[in-house]
Image 1: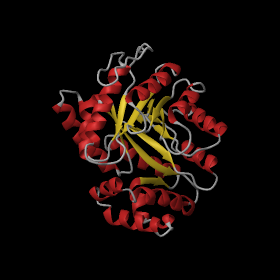
Image 2: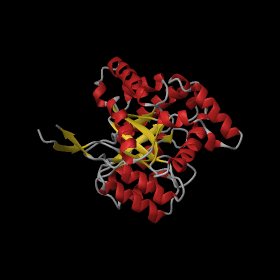
Image 3: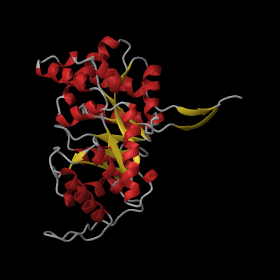
Image 4: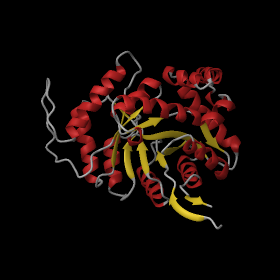
Length: 321
């Protein structure tokens, strides 16, 4: 029986590098034209995330626009809610608010729960009480702003199941998605929610280059940076990559991050040709990810490298035999 084309598979894109604005616009417009569902902007030491998304709302029409993520220590809940409501309004309801707890310290997840609840209340047009009473004057749109949280450990995953609309996983192999699904289900069922109401997204670093000797050092350097962070080291240890992560952290400390173990890179990143990397991305879907998010790590010239990865992993129509 001939193959029948169906809807495109769901794929997101993350954009971290502080490219020139005209290059950012070109990348984002291309992502929309090639079928990517959502764009996520991590907040790093470059452009402010909400204002960047507001600018991109004007050059896109279907692409969902997400913070990926902003930490709760960076802004008061009212400011975050106003910023999210502004982007949601300007984009015609395409905002996704991704939140992170910030430093992994005692009480961080409790503060994230309280922060999320407060922001959600404000976005619903309700008054929040407390030290500073606040009510958003901008009327809520016809669709609410979904709130997703970043989650590395099981407690954060359960919290997502209890209170969030989605979860963003990061720097993990596909089997971690299976684990996360289980913890999300536990949290959702404990809160009387349907686990299917929680979107599971996962960032997947990728570099599609003809020469793996070009892609591998770039991905290794990125892996080494994150392996040096205690929270990510714990996650790498939890998935059996503790020794590789320790070696990657040492490589970074020695000023040679590009020499981080290849085994670590291949376990959590995508490289090779587009077909090989596409199979790797599909493995995350097969493990239960609703929205794999391609996270380009550039090699050589940043914009052209990002575009190559974007095209190489662009969503293709699903097929049914």
